[in-house]
Image 1 (tube, rainbow, N blue to C red):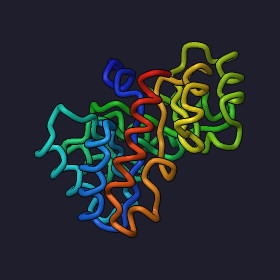
Image 2: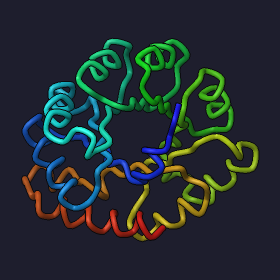
Image 3: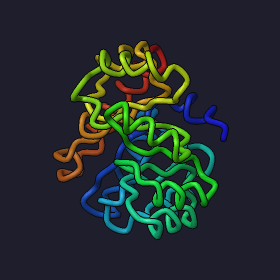
Length: 208
């Protein structure tokens, strides 16, 4: 499975919106700010419909996927809607198998070394280190010791100020949630603020 698109995208926006409409508006704001990696989480209402609409609108101009995938049915629905990658917050063998059966890039969550080993054993293409804020870039760097060749993507605790530290520690890409697309901005419909944050992340991601 090629990870070139993920590597070049660098930043995935983890979008947890209160409604499908706000998710679409937030996605537009993120793309306007230069963040083209969009992870539409299943905590967003009608997530497959959001993915379908964004895929129809942007096509290959964005790197679009589904997050918080916890069931095989969710994996199938996201794939049918046009997702290009699937992200789970944790790692389970049966769920990973169902995600892999879609043929999409699969990212499953882990924190401890044992969980990283399980994710690799079950065939995850990328291991999502979550919540990465618990250990910071130093922890990611420590994981690189026993796992030098495992693609790691930290999510949680990533900011424009420390994004360079995450890549220096060995991240293949980073996931950014609340610091990029905050619940307050989503609730207020403050799309300009989301675009502003996206611009900061985009510039920092390119230079990292």
